[in-house]
Length: 180
Image (cartoon, rainbow, N blue to C red):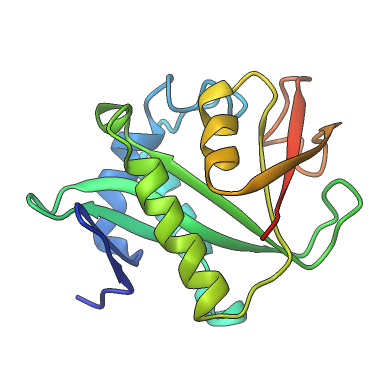
């Protein structure tokens, strides 16, 4: 197993098709998708397609979301890291979107902050990223709080319409930029 990052409690490594069951468990949970357009996955094939997309990001841009595993159990916790956005999203193109998503059973344990801090640091120190953005649903206070703890600063709210199939709730999205 190729490990990019190791924290006190977590292992962060590239996603692989072996993560399909964990991804499906996470993304089929309606609570996980509450702020993601309210369209939880209904088949494991959707997880396979998502992982295939991440693998294409690795190949095309040498970056992508990374699997987060609990160190003691090796359980799939979720993902963290970067996604190259060709755009446009909120009038931005060709930028790094920073994000994280965890299985609900791991919420409230500080794992999003711990994995987020480690993967953000990796991107800045090892990959040389400078312009890093994050976004979350305006109503997702927990995610906004994590972004702010990690050093992201609020820029503006906007209507996310770049992918209406993903984000069709009509709600606003909060736009953040990492500020060193």
